[in-house]
Image (cartoon, rainbow over all chains, first blue to last red):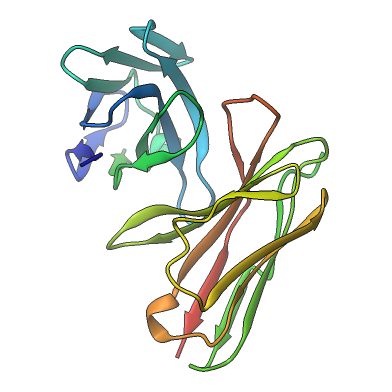
Length: 113
Length: 113
């Protein structure tokens, strides 16, 4: 069964600290993996998209890694800011395309001063 | 561009009533997606269109749900009759032809009493 599991479910960190969010998937055949940031009350916003051949991609203080062999991805946030407080959703697409999509349930990150 | 526009932003209705959610995609985007998000199930893809044609509606929960895209600048998601378990946030997202990044609207928060 195609599934995306994210951990932890929620996380609280101090402003300025780094953190890493995990995403494990069993989707096959793999097409690409995306990380979205969703602020409370808003729609998700794309952070990174990685295909099978990419193992790392950065977007400012956000760096995503992908290990297609172990079917794991991580999102590393450097020098966290209060505005990083949001849900981070991992999404995997399969069957060579941008759809269909399998969604993780997200990690809720709270950055506190 | 104003981004993806959804209306209404909030909807409260009684069980059994018809609900119509609306979406205006970003101009020039050929793909349009309807999602539902709940705390329990996270984000779920309901249906998507390419060039106004429904491509995959396998995520539509049941016959009470229907979606249309009569032209490139407008789509509706209708629930008739609505039930309390339909309460959720419904997102519309669009992307360019062949594009990987989906741009989400602000969502419609639906409460069925």
